[in-house]
Length: 390
Image 1 (tube, rainbow, N blue to C red):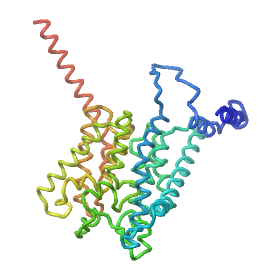
Image 2 (image 1 turned 135 degrees about the vertical axis):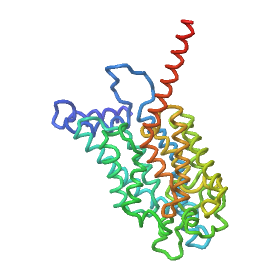
Image 3 (image 1 turned 120 degrees about the vertical axis):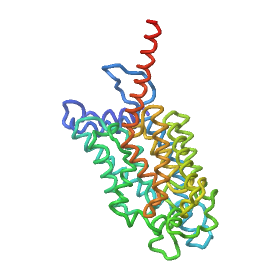
Image 4 (image 1 turned 180 degrees about the horizontal axis):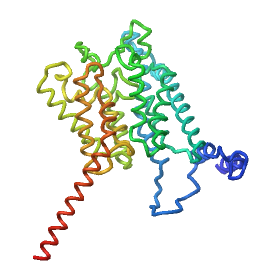
């Protein structure tokens, strides 16, 4: 490792203060801090000495995403071959490699475009590159359809980074989750490539033998669900859907990692599930449409709800910050996700819009929670003064 350290120090010399390429120092420093712990500490103001920094937090989230990503790669190949070969599957590696050939280019494009913009803004503004896009760069392809065109993905990423992050000042300043903003942009800019029955399974749009319809899409269109799309298939994730959103089992592994490390808020996750379950139960009692009659337990394991509530809603920047606010925030996300899903047949997946809506309202929720606590403390103080003077 000393050889690598010496080599990086040698490369950095022309980028040091007063040298020829000083302006481009943020770009080379980003490589250094990615491989090694930064060699500088806070100089001014009150601060806490802690081993956890932004880079470690982001890497923890990436580790939590790996189970869902690996299963998503396998499922991409599985859904393709199970329909193409009429239920006869090729060897495991053939299935996995087919999925990898579809997912890997999306990840490369996402990181290339997103980090390119981040580096450009860091150089222009004269500050270091933040590690925030390490997670967003992986999340964006994970929530897209498997055959989403790469040039559309690049434009969606550029919109999310430019409008969703840099316009607000960069990492830590954004009010919306960048990955969801990329998906929202793709949905409204390229609706034919983000909805319908030909986009959720690899090569479904070009092969007549393959259907790309999802469970929610079939219910929205009033179709009968195949017998193999039961609760356990949905829980395991062997169903059509976005790249890495289908396996609740893999997502729960990621949720455990986030909660155990303290990176993700269990209050948001649990309250989101409770809000969605109660809302789905309420609509089950009405049961007018197929989506209303769809069992509430199934609502929790299909679509992108589980992925959104674990990895998107818990974003520490755009979510509510107070303990009580997190519970309110999560419950409302669950409520709006189910409501949008059931009442909007044109877009039967509501978690994206629900989280973006609550991103907007999160500061308001925290404002009222904090002011409510201040009011209670003032009342207690006034009461104690009255008792003393009595």
